[in-house]
Amino acid sequence: MIGNRNRRSWFICTGLLLLMAVMALSGCGTATKTEDSSGKGENTPAQQTPAGKKLVMAYTWKPSGVDPHGDNSWDVMRSGAGETLIRLNEKLEPVAWLAKEWKHDSPNVWTFSLQDKVTFHDGKSMDAVSVKASLLRSIEKSHLAKDLLDVKSIDVNGPLTLKITTNQPNAALASNLADPSTIVLDVASMKDEQSYPAMTGAFKIKAFNKDQSLVVERYDGYWGEKARLAEATMKFITDGNSRLMALQSGEVDVATDIPVDNAEVLKKNDKLQVLSAPSLRTHMIVYNMESSVFKDAANRKVVDSLIPRASIVSAVMRGYGTEASSPFPSILPFGKIERKALNGTAEQLLTKDGWQKDAQGTWSKQGKPFEVTLLTFPQRPELSVMAEVIQSQLLNEGIQVKIRKVENIDEALTKNDWDFAMYSMLTAHTGEPQYFMDMFYSSTSEANVSRYASKPLEDILHSLKLANDTTQRNAVTLQALDIINTDLPQSFIVHPDNVFGVKKGVEGFTPHPIEYYYITAQSDIAE
Image (cartoon, rainbow, N blue to C red; front, side, top):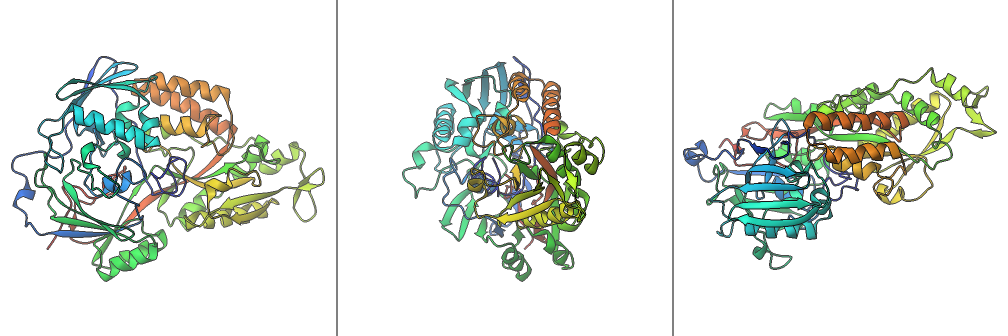
């Protein structure tokens, strides 16, 4: 899952916040061509701006390197150095980038036409041969790229034309090619682990200082609009309060992932501003379907009905979030679904299921109290606070909750000594539901942490792979969500916002639904 570290693994659950939405794919045999979002042009304002402007960002994570074909792809993309064939626009639709157009020839075959006159940072020209080599390398190095693309073969059909054949129908392919794991680079530039990749972005890597910073500088040979900044530095500051202080002191111009508790502090500073946008991240509870308590759907539904979502949004998230009713927020066409109402009160449902309430107000069944273990983890402090709120709410209703904090939530979930757990997921990181649904709900997937199995759901998910039309894909996804909300293997709590602190005078830094694009050619700062 894209979680804990966002891109570290689709399975890890503590990553950065993100959002996205449904792509507008073409039907079979029709061409898709959208406006190139690079801002390519002859007389751009950036070409008249001063050459020495520099921007410094306090960045949340510490990448282990700068090879984009692996765990560090998101970091590289955010630096403005890397580009993919497809870009996701502000409406979360796939648009042209290094590929200027594409065509879905048949369920398994796609043709991509590449931009002309693009060069890598080492001066070599980008063509179909080099892009093929790069994609094959990304598939080899990154399990995420391999799974997202599901490629059978890549053929060069001309100097700037690629044909991609997938193993099975993959209607989400165009959108999935926006994932940072598919960044295009000159494979020959990767001589060893210390090599800086020659990519195609508006910036090129100047220096990588492990555990400290990533510095990029303007690439004057860029094929699109030249960068307005001469240089940008991403300083790795993992502690939220330290990022806040670096921004307040003027050490940095932008700070990512500001703790929501501190947003009000920044608002009082007339030299700073808070920027936020909704994300595609979902904070949730995952139930252990093998738990003696939660294998019973009625008990899951009772707990779900008692979660005080509105209070969590206002008190824990300080308003920086929205109540969740599915894995996907309602900003997505396939996320517009309501939670199913409980059939009666919690007390009525428990009584019907054989539970009895004693004089102290505690529920028990066959001599055993309704007592459950809730896991949480430290990397996302707000989840631990939510766990305490939920614990208090359930205790008021006679359900006893023991909270256990674990250092590695994914490892803890592989064991069977828990009943439910706090969790956090990016659920549509390429604007598509397909990959997340396949991974999180397939009975054979290691990422199915709830150990949930539903043959009707898996049948629907198979049909999603065959659906090319956007309206049809949305409808199929909603069918799947109806099953999930009926069976309730998870309780979806809140979709958090992305919160950034920015020095006034910084321009071109707009929270994007897809957090791939932090530093861009349009990034600027007043002198």
